[in-house]
Image (cartoon, rainbow, N blue to C red; front, side, top):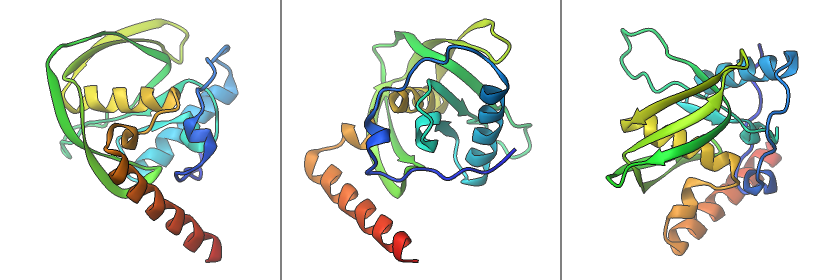
Length: 173
């Protein structure tokens, strides 16, 4: 396992629709392990393959917040929302590709998601609360969408300028 570099917005790969995972092989398994290690190290609760520059429909997440509970890592290949509640939740979202920036985003409070597991089996589950927000946020990454796309244009531009400045500072370092 290895900790990989996370792309920082703006990067055109973060706005690109990812390709389906066609085969579950050692490369996909290794990528999912690296993604989990990278996510936990960041630290974050979700990470999509495009955030590492890998344009595949793969995401990992673990929204277990209770420090006494065991981790609940999940790996979802080719995930898709199959149902969404009419009820809406608002969370202040952040993103590992947009560090230290947050914004309130409204999303369905509950979603049903279907995906393929690392063992090749079809999976599905209903997510609510933070899990629902996280899975929708990560699926957005697979579709080339960022949480700031839900914000007002002025706020989105301000965050983008901050990220451009951050990238320039990192390049100089």
